[in-house]
Length: 152
Image 1 (tube, one colour):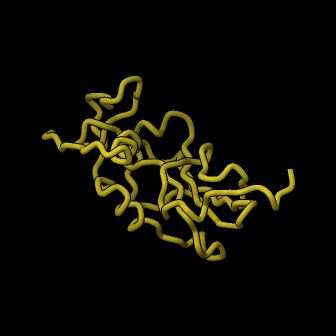
Image 2: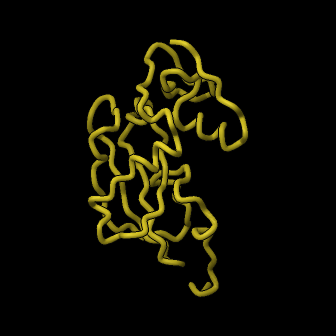
């Protein structure tokens, strides 16, 4: 199949979408670079997380995607997302915190260690104040399910 006949959906997607390095918004992606997550994200234990920059080979849209090593994803209080990048030359200094917070207001919360996410077969830790981990909370919201806060 010729590349000119391949279509992508980059243009129709929001600036922030659920995803990660192994589940990008486009099937035809070229890896460009990676960097560690900036300080300010609560990651327990520290380290093991990174952000990668990809370029859609169809439309040349750049995407950054979250990545985690091993089981560290269970200990994060924010969802794994892909973010459209408009300036790939300054990507190393791009601060995405405000975009992430608009997508997931609970980003400033920690995780709670004494219970598991309420989603069946999910072993991740829930965000404090919610019954769900960050990824399941976002998936439920995208389906129109309201997330009721809980007292901890």
